[in-house]
Length: 339
Ligand code: ACO
Image: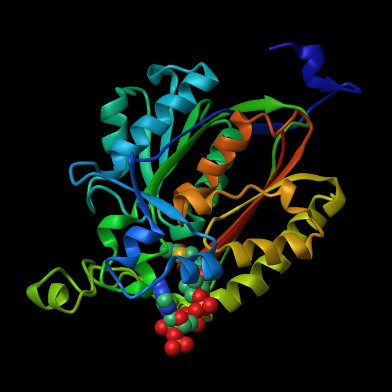
């Protein structure tokens, strides 16, 4: 490392973590709103008007979450110019892992041949990627990891009741990955913020298959292995909470909304995204939106959107990037990055 670059006024610059590569992957199969019109009592007009979603990607029967992770990871590691052997920690944020045990991160570790890496999963539903980012950032800043692979990945389509129009139109499958490495100086992750309120756990849940309701003929008959959501109640809490969250995150970093180059929100609902952007007085040209093409991919939505804006050249060095998410738990989280 260049010591002159790492010092300012004789003092060593603080250690941060920096995203050095991004990647993403979405299954090939596209399911449009018009396809859904033929499955349930819904319409393209309702789905587009209420959510902004036009189509979503659906994994093959044989494709599991770790398969999506692998493709996104390969792309991120190539962009970061990092080999599997150099990765010392793998974190997968998911609520739809391959199986309850082992972790999807362990299965990804095998697929990558990342023989020097520890591996574990993080589950904070749609806030999962930002929870994982906070964990990864702390590992790097604390000096105990040097090259972290963080993936947000979901195969939501296998946990959806395709006869329930209130949920089946919302979700999609995909994966996004980043590589984080240490950096001294002003660039990197400036702060991460994690919150939860378990009192509203039943607003979004998948109640079957765990120790409370272990899998049985009864849990299957009662469709407890599918996502349930109180959509309208969740919507109201999400709008209120995210408006406060983004303002607080900027204040804590003494950054004005007008200084923001890009907002990368979780992609659940275009109306929620627009309300957050309006609170920041941010034009939609500075907001990453891809839910029209992918739907809500839960913990994959932010890293997919990040990868898209990076590859499209929409982020430049020194830009302030704000990431925010809201999901089951309830959980919500944010991160501010100086690129
Ligand atoms: N097609 C047609 N009509 C529908 C559909 C559908 N797919 N789904 C519901 N409706 C009907 C309802 O039955 C209801 O009819 P009624 O008025 O006759 O009772 C009407 O449409 C309105 O339903 P609402 O649920 O009130 O609609 P709303 O405007 O709230 O939109 C939505 C629903 C899109 C789910 C919205 O509430 C939302 O986005 N919520 C937040 C989701 C979110 O942020 N989740 C967090 C992340 S998810 C995670 O963590 C896994």
